[in-house]
Image 1 (cartoon, rainbow, N blue to C red):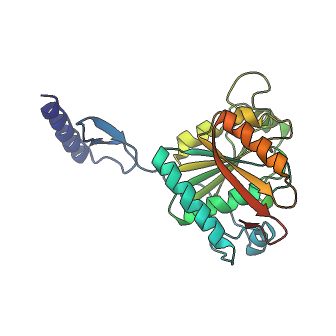
Image 2: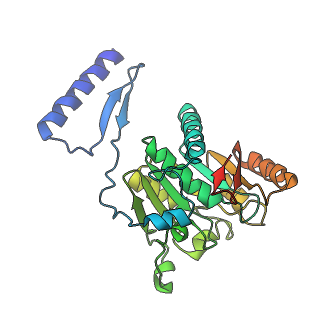
Image 3: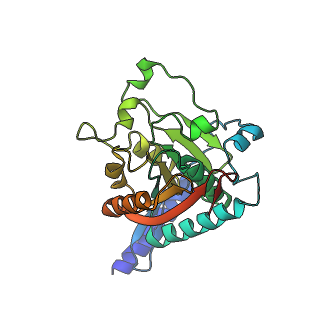
Length: 270
């Protein structure tokens, strides 16, 4: 009886959609193996987001080696993107954090290269700068714009969003108060991130966090993501730093592992 009812509803939905000329972005429904009707939401069109104009020299200075500009080290990010894509698909994960033991390990650079590599594989990625230290992806690419105090103090102000190509959006925390995360003991620790995810429906969100050992609120934010990747600096991170960071991450979320980044060799990731 339930199967026939679901079939009838599906046919009625199909006929109704055809008759009304449903818009491409409208919700649809599909029937699972159990006969349950589930909504299917088509990808949101990102073409209305202005594409950022970044010069090739800027990408080079930012050590961006994934995406269009291929180097001998691009394969490392391709492999990392492949592994991350697979594990996220297997577990149904959509929000991944990238953090470091301490500042200067290249976490933002790795996160940006990884986002571009994932985009090359067809994923639509939202990169969110939650580091709040003035050295995020927007700074690396020269995309940060001056903001007045009046604007940044408005809680409902939407974070500025920049598009790179067709598969990557970059945004940052709206205001200094957002970057304080859970300091006030409540609220959304990632500021305007949830609103951006709801609006743009990315396949995967990469959250660039402050270093986990610097006494910040990063461990609290780690509790809001599906998993986290640790980026250690070959010339900066000690074995103790890596071990302590891995332990802190594991206590809050799934620890994906450590990427050893060597900034002295063209931003290579090993």
